Length: 148
Image (cartoon, rainbow, N blue to C red; front, side):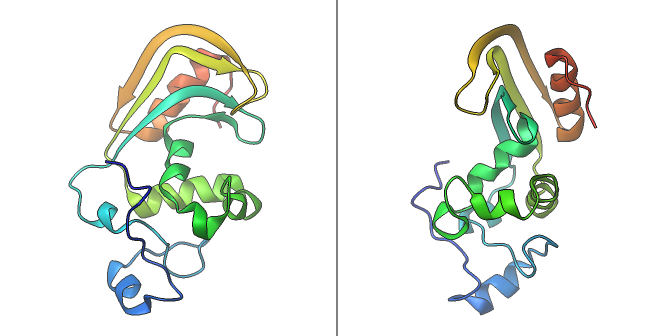
């Protein structure tokens, strides 16, 4: 599902609808601003590319969910979330959305100055599972990064 043109729940203009959505998060202070479609789906699947990231170390299934947060509200490239603390933002987005499955494509990933300026790196793997933290930890080990 492409949610780029979707209707979003914004705190400032749709307080009653957002309160009904019950998305609470320490980073977001109050209710998270998320796509309405995410409240209607039965499964949320994170499909990510295996890449290094200059701030987070790696961008995998959990960090990939930054993509569902509306850039019109959080800035591009989601600067508000980066400045709020990238680790806490990753955890809060995942705790709010509660994704069900992850697929990380590491057939050809990326290393170096990621997430956009790195070099292709062939790993030849697809890593998937229902526990996103375990999927990401496995990917980190494959990439030679000690998972935290």
